[in-house]
Image: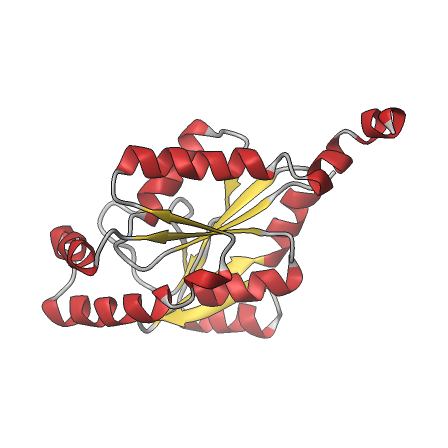
Length: 202
């Protein structure tokens, strides 16, 4: 019995991480894939919780061995998703969520065409800039680069199945939960999970 694979993407500052955390708190059966990254940990981040923090040499070796489902270089840092872990979780019937960028989402769709794609948008560019500045972790130069990158990323919104505008956090969180719940009712999923019943009814 296969689980659902959810791909959630957004430009930096759109609130993706917060929305994913709220979803995982509410939907305990959804498992978050922990990505690997070459970027240094931010204050409060723990290896194996937010990310698996790797040096560039180790990351490149994993790429060469084909161990990533997808990987990309973003803002000078590399991010990747373990292919083996994803396949094992889905085969066991577990729902898995990937919190990645649009480039990674394209790679995932090639291997998992039934993956459910969700893109998170900010309510405006002005609000996006305010959120980035409010973090207090990046320089003005970095923020400028992130804003330019965000506009480029948002041009790929049409490649996703669902779009959530994160203007009001609780509403956006509920919309993400509704996407997850509705996707479990797709025929391809129900046919796997309730094969005996459907066979008897038909």
